[in-house]
Length: 93
Image 1 (cartoon, rainbow, N blue to C red):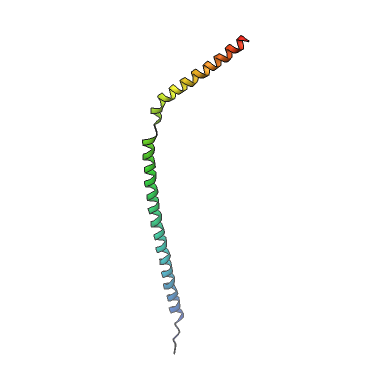
Image 2 (spheres, rainbow, N blue to C red; image 1 turned 30 degrees about the vertical axis):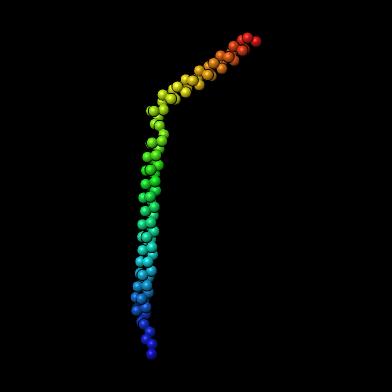
């Protein structure tokens, strides 16, 4: 002879089943969040290494100013010479 559980017992069993399912979902979400946090930490380490590499590889703006002045001066001198040659050519003809 089988005994059928009362509606109250069935409701309680359903609640317990839902709690187990929800706990499983939260455990999965927690594991995913932990993985995401670990990935973010790795990304931050990579960014710090890139910044460190940039500081060692490239020059700062202050260090570049003298080079910029020399190059601009040379380009200006060359363009002035070219303009002078064009003006001299125009007046000769």
